[in-house]
Image (cartoon, rainbow, N blue to C red; front, side, top):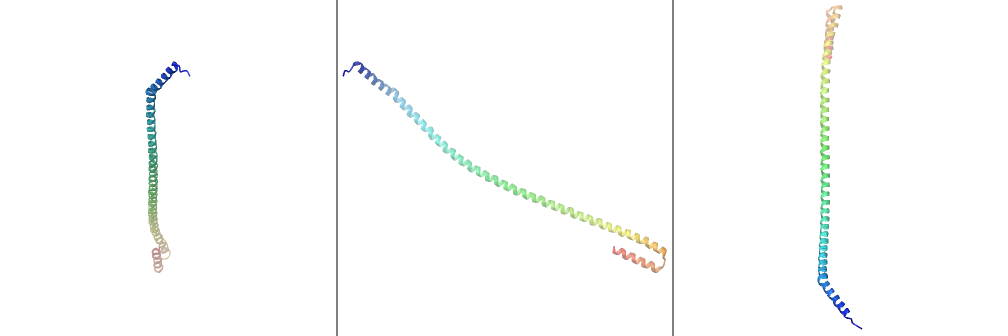
Length: 159
């Protein structure tokens, strides 16, 4: 085996190169990669924290949404209740007004009927007087005259 001086120089150069690479390239490279790995781990941890916070926020949002939905349903029920109350109140007022109008109409009809009866009584009285006058003209005796007056008075009282 013949060891050549070139081989020793090459071996020495190789070892120097390995040592230089180790000192100036490998150490900074591993430090850089370790630092980068730490940053990646930190970013992953932050992402996990953010994801957890997002889940919590989503849960809170869903809970708040359910609360708002319940409030809306309660408000709707209250509005329906108030609308029903107002509707009933309006219907009751309309019924009262209709009853009032009917009562006024009945009073007016009764008043007109009384006035009509009075007018008829007056006309009957006038007719009775006219008839009596004609009868008296025909028969002017006291007995018939008295009988006619009594009949007329009785008929006026009946009406």
